[in-house]
Image: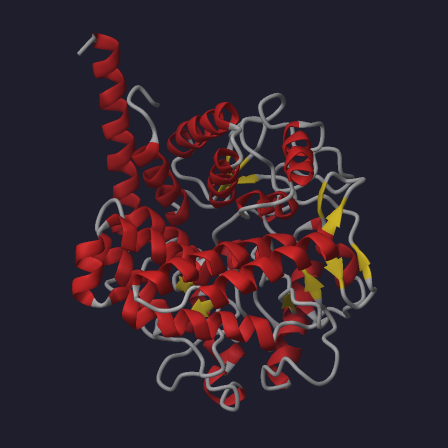
Length: 448
């Protein structure tokens, strides 16, 4: 081994050890918290990404991560976006269990007894995560009956999205709160949120500002609107039908992850000796609906649709690039997406090493504030995978290297400035460490 190769091998080991330390520190015995200080409970899509990274450390622990989450699934099939740890004081996080009141307000929808959860959902990454976890150690997975036990829960989750959440009746899943697509304060939501009267500031206390800089977090006005929407959904007993939702959006990133996970369900069904065709048919129908309803040729990407206004939202978000994960997109759309991700609006490979969460040229761009500009590691992990799927190998290799370098250098930050790589939000963030572990496992020798 040459001195340079030895140095590179040492750097890889140190980076891996540091990522492992984050995940071990944030492990609670049954699941992994995103951040021990700011996010002291279990979050839905966080756990899916964490499981993808954990599979390289302990496939059994990765299985446990998903099993714990689905242990809090509601009878109607929804997977709640937060599963609360009863040992954590109520004032450690807001909205806390006494705000959501899942056991009472969610009773008609089948909220679990003895476990406090939220009533909202997050992107359905879980079947994809479950399949990747299974592939990492098929023998342990089969011996524990991992797929056999999780498959009916995953299908119930997708059935919930296909029925309760097809808000417009055109096949795509809709979201009813900005927290559901995961990109909480994206400028895409400014228009739909402007119709919402915020809850009075005196009616809630933000725990997040005790841990993070206000300049990095959503504004008080945004938070007041989040609280108003969540309280209204709770007070309607978390029903999805009936009166129109004040906030109702079809989001391309949410639906892209839904499609990819539907393909994963087909693989899981096949592995269990079940019929994969219904899952493949749903994936095809969802892909057709995604293209028909959310593709905007002039933008060169997918856009969100405001169902209350009946129109696409003009803002360009990284959510509109996540369909690169979807197999068998029309070639013209793939070429347009590749042009957009490297062009002036996202700058990958020229002005940015990581894909920002929002349009670099957008009027609302802010390199520090949450989902209004900073780069997120889970999203860049997904885009790297999509680029590689469609043959943009050199670009994918560069993005993988950027995730590894920036993930370690930032202290596994929650998110970073897309141009400078400066850490923002929390450090020792679980899905950042998980993304680094997964990309290290696939990186060739000599990186980073």
